[in-house]
Length: 71
Image (cartoon, rainbow, N blue to C red):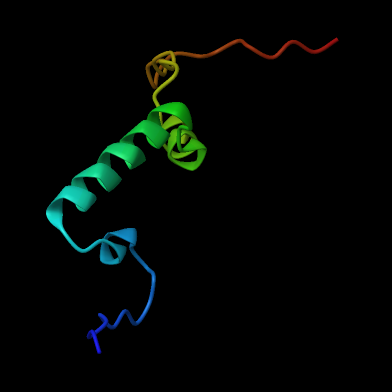
């Protein structure tokens, strides 16, 4: 009787292949999937912290700012 490998969980698909050639094919397939279907969670995380505007500098501390107009 052939001895089967024991796999305790499927947290990584690399554990499902038995040789380096199959691992290389699996890596190529995953890279193609990443090109066709981008990770939107990663995209939003990068976009969330992206610098998108430069604020105007604060006025000097001794300058009076007249920006409120009452009617």
